[in-house]
Length: 580
Image (tube, rainbow, N blue to C red; front, side, top):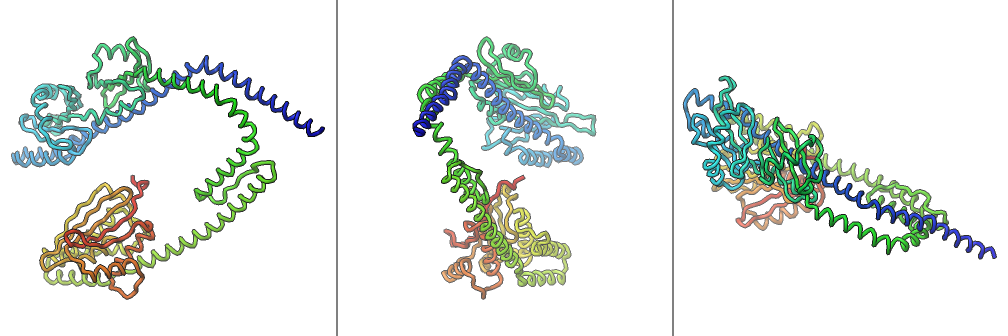
């Protein structure tokens, strides 16, 4: 009887729970969905559009600001003014054109925000110093000469020291004068920059629901989507700041205007309303079907399994994932009132504590062992190189030529600084490592003279990468001492590039590896043979240090290429989080 009573009580408890916790809330949910979902979704869509518009416009503003800032380099940097001042003194027009062209090339050729950068001097307006983005083409200059030249010259006369934007024949030009501050700010040159509109303003297409858009700079349309009258109607009474969303007589728009460097920039974006309507309809149908067909079953199953099974298992599962993330020592709280699951939780906590203790102990031991090995490897210095260097310096002193001696002493000092490692740093920037390598190569160039030819192909974007200290110099030393073919002429090429998350440092010399050399290299890089030459010891140490610091997938390889030249390749990992 007590069992039956308990069952009846449970049954009525379940009914009461379903009525109060499922039926009534479900009715309320239907009411909210069918009477208020439209307004909520429209508000959400509006906020989404405004947020995406703010982000996209912010990116465009940053790019435009960068383009304006880059244009100022021509005025603020001294190269053009100094070259022009020299021209006024000596009258060397060829020197002026060469120096200015070189400056324009270096500053703007690879700038993604400009299709073309052109500079002409007021006293010779028909002769240009020009550079292009990407493949050289005279189409930009032809368009400038045909449609824009006279208009820009007229604008320049009234411009002063400001910047002007002008859209001529669907090309957006940014114009600024370069003035002589020592001569009453007289304009002596004009800088004309054709903006890459796609790179600067292409981010507008990322706005949610984007249909079409236009940008006005000081009232000048870039894309010619809207007329001046339409712009005034859309922009009427819209404050500067966050994007304004509204429905006009012709559709839905997002408008925003900002000021940058005393220029008014206005953005007008037309939103495709069909996307908004389709999005809301899909969500409404989805919510209705979900409630109609799944809520009853989900609720009934959830009431039982969530309380008695799912919640305890979920807690253990989350704890297990924490252990996978090496968060050893993670504890779960009391996961259930049932004895079986409670015992399981306590056993898990005990296991987690034990794992934490064991892994901390193993980690500290391995860390201490690795540091000891690295310090031992780094302490091995090759005295043979130092003796050769001192001998060269001694001969140079006897034969006179103090500049050479001074330079060699500086190079030697640089290398000794690298070997002493006063800051106890295991990793240094690649730029610093190349400094040590350059110092060594300078000393070797004094030793071998024209018999040694060195070339470099370095991707300077990766000079920030931190690499183990003194890993390039031993490779160069090995190539010079054993690999170069000096019967003809020693050739040495250094290449630095990246593939995925690895940095590759290649040293190619015109020496040839024999089968005996290959066997010796294999033994050197894969065994711990002690009786080896000091230079070979340096190579083995480089390989071991890289593997210990960067992992087993990095290190040193020495092979022959298709031309039977010797290629020594250093592979290290790139940690992009260290880039500034």
